[in-house]
Amino acid sequence: MSVGPGHIPEPIARVRRLAVRDHVFASGDRLVPEETAIAFTYNRMTHAVMMATPADLEDFAVGFSLAEGIIAAPSDIRDLEIVAADLGVELRMDLAAERNSVFIERRRHMAGPSGCGLCGLESLGEAMRQLPKVGGMLRLSSDQIFDALDALAVGQKFNREARAIHAAGFWEPRRGLVAVREDVGRHNAVDKVAGAVARQGVVASDGIVLMTSRVSIEMVQKVAIMGASVIVAVSAPTALAIRTADAAGITLIGVARADGFEIFTRAERILRPVAAHVG
Image (cartoon, rainbow, N blue to C red; front, side):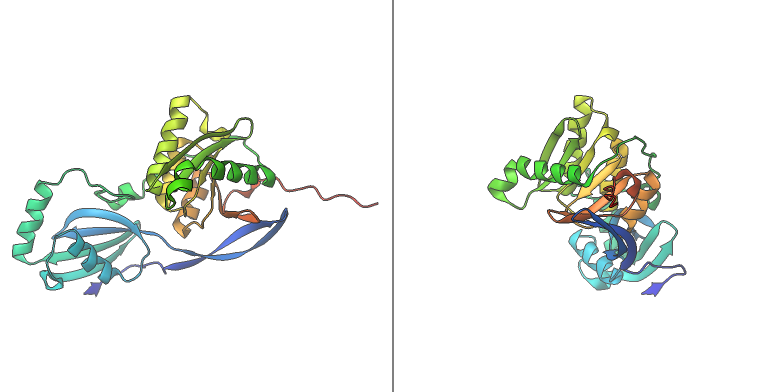
């Protein structure tokens, strides 16, 4: 294995955030996982791009290749070069001749790839595509954030019955919970909510997209394409998701629980309580 020139991000990043607890706003830091586009190429042909933590990449290359049936053993990879690029990292593998024949035949018969995330994208550029800038004049109080979270919990019918099911919702200050959709795949749940909002003719910038999962870049990309200006998630975001949300003009709130939440980007959309004046 060789590592090409360039910088591979550290797997953990320290970010600034604004924590809200009992209506008190406090600045501070949080450690969040990094997320990077990882391209798997075999004999200079791209097979897939995955969003992943940039650590243990040699193991990732071998394990993914085994799981995909591209190799039968690690020795089928004659050379592995890890190449850092501006948009991500390429795992550049040269296959033994007999395994390359298997790879070529497999590509010829590939149907659309299944699964979640960015599996099957053909370039780092598409994985890191530029997003539309989100606008809107939405302003929210912390109480409204809590109301939206409560409404999502009530709307999770499938999860109450079976557990282990992700949910996404769309909440408006005027109408409350407009839509809630559930799926075993967190990406699927967001796609379903986007479809529901579009079919109802709802202006996405007027409300909040709620998620029961962590926030990775794909989730931010989906919300930006919807045109929604606020994400509220019960888990933490990745560092790349934070950078992407900020660039797209999205207010990203994570670690949202009954006792508070943390604002990672565009905090100006969240109203701060006015301190009482004591004469």
